[in-house]
Length: 315
Ligand SMILES: NC(=O)C1=CN([C@@H]2O[C@H](COP(=O)(O)OP(=O)(O)OC[C@H]3O[C@@H](n4cnc5c(N)ncnc54)[C@H](OP(=O)(O)O)[C@@H]3O)[C@@H](O)[C@H]2O)C=CC1
Ligand SMILES: CC(C)(CO)C(=O)C(=O)O
Image 1 (cartoon, protein in one colour):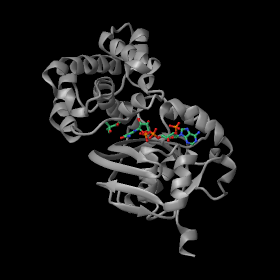
Image 2: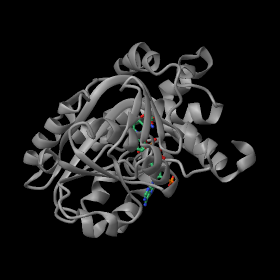
Image 3: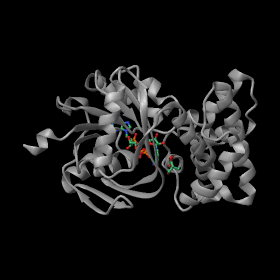
């Protein structure tokens, strides 16, 4: 009977982040994951293998689905962890399931919550500043963590109540989490880190620590100064007054925290998948054009990533 009272969650687009979350959340919730057949087959056969700072071992009880009709009634929360390039497609695929349910995004980049809000009324925005990777089918690794998960009301009358409940579920599972009273700014705050390190790591095949190299610091500073100018024009209230204040945090805290690991875009480029560049640096370029702000550093790095993405011999 106890399991019937557990919250029922559906994680949409479960790879590095989604499967790791599923592994942790299944301690306190019944968790369905919408994932690819390779993960589903491995997890059905031998459970989810998880290693790293969130614990080591095999997690049984995660329920894999590869099609929307496999999701039973009774799901209370949906968490989207697909890449931002797949947000619309996965929302379309699971549209019947998610309509009317609270849906949270833990994705990087700007624009995912707006898409999700087209499919349900109640949206919770979120960020996760932890490093996750896929080791193989049904096997994930969790490495460095630099800040607690942030969750905040995005839209919908029911979002405040949904937020409280979701935070309770996440906290009960032992994942550090905080409520954000301005999750729009929270998404931009997280994007600063991704704009600074993801494309450089992906292009150079180097871990995040490379961003602090003397030859790269000025590039990172250029990316961030442009992003601050655009964020200011958009009226986004970042937690740092100036780009240089954030750069100090980036180089003194975030880059050291993630020095040895590779960001998600590194894996996308290596594996020939679409990258999230247009939700990050490419987005800054588009907004810069709208506001008449020059963004040469972001334009350059976004172009390099797009070129490498389109030319296998360049990645
Ligand atoms: N990895 C990290 O350390 C962090 C990542 N993030 C962000 O979290 C999000 C997820 O990243 P990450 O977990 O690394 O990405 P992954 O690519 O590892 O995981 C996403 C998974 O969703 C699958 N997927 C996509 N569409 C569908 C679908 N329609 N049905 C079933 N499965 C689907 C993908 O399969 P396929 O590849 O075959 O399409 C992939 O396995 C991104 O926005 C990322 O930027 C945030 C913080 C840290
Ligand atoms: C925080 C970081 C850099 C962790 O890997 C990330 O968000 C990503 O990989 O996209």
